[in-house]
Length: 585
Figure (cartoon, rainbow, N blue to C red):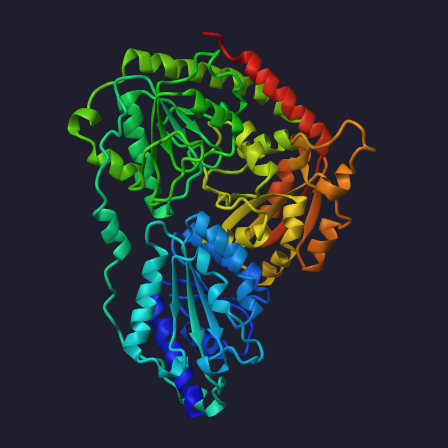
C-alpha cells in the first residue's frame, strides 16, 4: 500500500499545481488505472475547482470543450487507458482547429507492460499527437516516482501550452504502476499538501508581446474599404478591447462592417453593421465592392461573402486573434497578422489613427446601409409571425431571446440560417458555434459546457446533430447551469436539400437513404427518458410562451417541426428577393 499512497500523493500534487496554474474544471470519466487521479480530483474539489463525472469520454471531452470556449481557459478531462483515449479525438480536433484551450490527462500502463500484449495497453500516446500543442509524459515507470518539483513543472508546462499561439489542446499521458487503490486507512490519514509555488511566467504572453507590428499592412484609411468580420475565435477576455478597436477604426475610416452571424458583433452598439451580405449575389452590379478589405478572423461559411471577397481585387489584410496558421482559404495572397485587432490598432502610427472618413468611403458605406435597411425591412415582413419555417424561426429567435443570453448554434443549416436571416440590429449576445472542423459531433455536450460556464445558454440544433450526441442528455442531472434546447426537426439532414444533390426523378437516386437519413426516433420521448421535460411548438404564436417555459427549467427541449424541402425553396426565393432589391451602380 505504500506505492498506492505515493501514487495518490503524486496525483494530488499534480492536481493542486494545475489549480494554481488556473485550472477551474475537471471532467472525470470512470476507470481503474486512473483511480489515483480520480481520488485526487475529489480531494482537491472546492471553491477553485469544479468536478464533474461522465460515463462517456466523447461527451465529457465536448462538455469540457464548451466550458473552455465560454470561460476562455482550459478545462481538463481525466480518463483511464485504452480506447477511452481514442474517444477524445473528435473534441481534440475541434479544439485544435477552433483554437480552444483544453487539457487531456490520461492514465496509462507503465513501461514494463508496453509492447508485450498486456491488457488494455495500446499506443495511446499517439492517438491525439497530430492535433495537440504539446504531448507531455510522466515517468515511464510510474507517476509515484515523480518528484514534487517535476510534477509542478509538468503542470506549469501543460497549462502554458494550452494558451500558446494559437491556443489549443494539450495531452498529458501518465503511466501509473500498481497498486492503484489506496486503502481506507490511507485516505483517512492523508492530509492535503499546503505546498505553494510561484506561478511561472506565461510563455504565450511573452511570445505575443514580442510579435513585430505590421503597420497598416498596405491599407489606406483615407480611401474606401470594407471590414469583413468572420467567426470570432479569440478568448472572451479579449472581446471588449476587440470591439473598441473596431469602433475606433470605423470612426476613422467610415468603412462598414460586414458582420458574419458568428462574429458576435451583431447588436453591438456604436458600430455601422451589415447583416445581409450573405444574401447579396451581385455585389459588383450594385457598386458594393471595395478596393481594399480588412478581414477579421477565419473565413465565413457564406459562399456569397467569399465571392464578394474575390471580387474585391485590391489590397486585403487579415488579422487573427492569436492564430498564426494560414486562414487565407481563398488563396488571395493576403498578409496575415496574428496579434489581434486591439494590438494592431494600438501599433498604428498617430497619423493613421487620427482624422475623419473620406467622402468616397462614406458614399460606399451609405450604399451598403441603404441595402441593409431595404433588405431587412423586406425580411422583417416575410419572416415575421405567423410565418413558419427555418428562415423565420432563426429571425424570430434572434428578436425574442434577450440580450446577453449565450446562444450555441449547431453546424449545417442552423448556423447558415442565423447568418442569412437575422438582422444586425437584433439584441447583442455571445454566439458560440464550433466551426474549427465544422462537425456535428458533441453538439449537446458542447452546449451543456457553455451553460455551465455562463450559468444559462440556449442551443439551436437540427435533429441529426442532436441525435448524434444523445448521451449529452445525461448532463441533465449534473448541470449547474440551465440549458434550453431548441430543436429544428426537419426529418433528416436539411443541409443536403440546399445542395445540388437531389435528382429530379426519385428513381435515379435514393436521396432520403443516402443523404437526408431521417431517423425513426421521437426526440421528446428520448429527452423524457433522461428526465428532461419537452414540448412541441407548431406555430409562431406559441414560440414566446414556450421559450419562457423552457428557460424556467434546469434543462428543457422545444421541438419545432419544419419542412426541409419547402424551406430550401423558400431560401432561394428570399435570396432572389434580396438581389432584386440591391441598387444598381
